[in-house]
Each structure stands twice: as structure tokens, then as C-alpha cells.
Image (cartoon, rainbow, N blue to C red; front, side):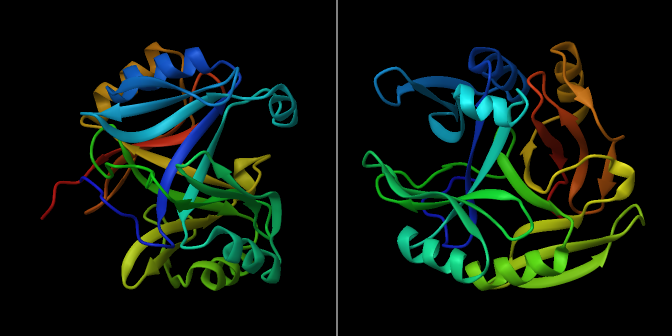
Length: 264
């Protein structure tokens, strides 16, 4: 699905900070069958976009050493949500009990960004578009398709994001019967999901995880295995949603790959 504009409050972009950006570029371009393009991001930095038929899907960059050390040398996916005004949203984050990791700043003429942490500890970013909207293709093979918050305090997270984005909250049983799943809606449209971190998961920090759509899950999981990824969960399936697995890439980042169900 081609995107011309993201509605404020919707997930609109993701980028991967990697301790080995070159290896991550190879992994994701092969896994998702997308093209790469390197862009200058300052005097000595490169921001690599991953593209499908010339349309932006997501990006990868080399993680600064300080950030790498803070994350234990693991790569990290960052989720971005579109907002109308980054500065006003940053102030609202503080009012709602969140904190700012980075105050609003301009990314050249592309847009204005804020990096924040919600009251439960999950890091996320806001994007006020100028010349770049974020992802130009969504919910088709090779592109972002969903994101999901894992948190220890669903009630606090629901209150925070509802206050920030105007999301409505709905809950229901998990497909595997292990707990409750929260779906966030914006004007009746699915915006994001949320799950409570389970004790059985072990050491698991709150964070926003992303989903990538693939054409064929079996073929994609074999490519992932061949390139050194690990499967964290067995394959799961949700009727009318699709088949998916949660994996760890060779640089330590977590993500889900999903073969979306065909439209009814």
C-alpha cells in the first residue's frame, strides 16, 4: 500500500541503530528483498534507506559508540509516530509523565524529531514531517506492517498514549490464550498493539517492537536462519491477520516477520 501522508498519531517510520551497519544492510536487504541507498547524515555519517520500487520503507544507521555501550552492543529498532507539532507534543509528553531523551530538533529539511521515553520505560520517537513523510509503502512484503509495545504496566501505558495521541483502547484474549492483548485505535483504525511482559520471557525491558511483512514466511525464515538470525518464538497464527514469528537478527535486534493473511 503506497502512502502519501501519515495521519498524526500513526506509526510512520522505523530505523535500526546497528553496531555493524554494513552487516545489517546486507541482512535486511536480503531478508526483505529490498534495495538500499546511502544518504549523507553529517560529515562522517551515513543513513541508509531501504526501498521498494523507489519508495522508502525504513532505514539503518551506524550506532554511535556511546549508544552501543548503553545497549550492550545490540542493534535497536526505533519506532516513529507522526505528529503535527513536535514541540507541542514534547511538552505534552512531560505533562503525561514521560521524559525526553532528546529535545525537538530538525533533521535537515526532512522533518523535526523528538526522542522520548514513556512512563513505563519504552523509548519511542515523534516525527513532524516537512519534506519527508516517513515510510512511503506500508503493509506489503518488504515494508513495515505493525508495531507493538511490550510493557510491565499496560494501564499506565494506555493512559499515556491515549493522552498523547488520542488513541482508543480495546482489549481481548491472546490468540494462544496466554494473556490479554490491547489494540490501540485512532478514529476507529488500528494504530498499534500492546502486550504485558510475561515472567516466562525472562529479562525483557519495555520497548516498541516492529513487524515486517514478507511474501512467504517459510522462505523468509529460511533466509533469516541462513544469515544467522535466531527464532525466539515458534510460529504463531491469528485468523484474518497472518502467520508470524518473532526473531533476533544477527546484530541482536528483535523484530517480527509476518506473512499477512489475504484480504477476505
